[in-house]
Every structure is written in structure tokens, then in C-alpha cells.
Image (cartoon, rainbow, N blue to C red; front, side, top):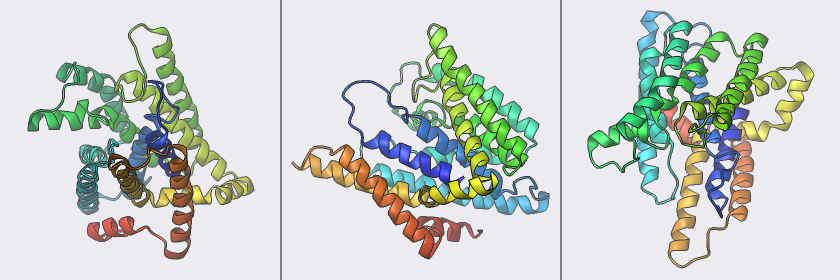
Length: 321
């Protein structure tokens, strides 16, 4: 799971740093953030008990943990948005997704799956009804719609990914059957989403288009990646070797909140220096610097100190490991 999260972080680095000479879409565009969101659902499933969720008497404590985490991540996202990094911050949207998932955190898998299918179809349609022209928010109500339906990372449109990630965690991530289902069903969904965009007129699966085709395509890709990583990292001696080779990536994933935040600070400094007459956006050198510094820094921190600084802070505030 940490390796998958590390991949999502590196994908965001690429999406945020590579200069665009046209309107073309990179492989990482949209898909990295969707992988990040899918992993959020899986992580919430693990935090809330995995295959053995607690009884009703213990659930309120876990809900409080999720609520505190959501509030912390929301405030951090709002703070990062003020730095001028020129990046669409995901953290405050991420927190809204946490809150939207909270009432269903301990629902049965059938209920989670049914709700995911309903939202997969209805939420993109509702988003078009609320804002067919992608207008800029002009009121508090518009801001609410932006977080839920019309923004860069719309919570209700993306919620099926978290719901199905929660289903995966409830199904047992260490079970070979679950891993195969994630890889196979994810691949099938990706083919359906991107295939429909290729053959059906008026259907698009472009990054951040908030369509059913995009969620199927990019979300299916996310589940396929997670399933394949689970398969190869739990395959006996081979899995141990793969995990060892990819350990720096897993370290970055384990410190994802800290690494993401540091990235935004760096990008804000680069943008500020450019606007003050400094060099143009450095692109590839910036990407390489961010990737190398993140992998080496996260590896050293993880090896010697364990949890990242922001991860420690949010755990302390939530009062639960």
C-alpha cells in the first residue's frame, strides 16, 4: 500500500512540474490523484478494522479519529492553497471525501458497492446540472458545490473510488482472491471507461473531466495497480525482493502527507522566484530534484525515525495509532 501511495506521489510530481507545450495529456494527469483517493478508501478500511470492524460500542472512537484527521487535512489544504504554488491542492477535497464517507464507514459491503454504483452514474450527471458551464464560485453555496461536484477533485464524483477501496479492505487485502479481483476487475473497468470514450460520441475520459467514463477508466487503473502491487509483493521470496527494491518508494508513500506538503512549499518558492525575475520554471531539473530528495529523504527518515513529522502530528491530534 505504501508503494502504491509512493507511486501516486511521484505521479503528482510529474504532473506538477513538466512544462506543457500544448493541451496534450500526460499518463499521470488525473490518474495519480485518483490513485491517491482510492488508497484513501483502502486506508480508512484498514484504520476501521479491515476484515474485522469493531462492534457498535467502539465505532464512535474511530469516527472521531477520522473526523480529526479530516479537519487537520482540510486546514492544511487551505493553508497550502494560500502559498501561490499554482497547483490545485487536493488535501481539502480529500478531507471532504473523508467526511462524506464517514456515515458509511461501517456499512456492509453490499451497501458500499450499491452506493458506489449509484454515485458513479448519478454524481457526474448532477455535476452537469449544477454547473454546466464550469463557472467560478461566487458564493458560499458555490464553494460547497465546488467541493462536492464541480471542483478539480469533486468529492461525490470521486466517492465511488473510496467506497470500493473500503470494500477491498473489508475483503482482506492479504487474500489472493481479493488481489486477483482488484487487478482483474480494475483492468476491466479501465477498458470499459477508456473504451467508451473512444467509441461513443460525446463521451470523454479526459483527466479531471468528472465523467463516469473517467472514473471508470482512471479508477479502474488505480485498482489494477493496487491489485498487481499486492500480488507481486506478497508472492513469497519474489515479493520480498520486490518490496526491498521498492522500499524507497514505499518510504515516500508512508510519509505521503509530509512529502506532498514539502512539494507544494518547494513549488511555491519556485513560482515566487520566477515571478520576482528569477529563472523560468525549471521543469525536468525540478522534477528530478523533487523525486531524488523525496525518495532519499523519506527513506532516511523512515529508517531512523519511523513516522513522518506531519503523520506524527495528525496521529497525536487524533489520539489513536
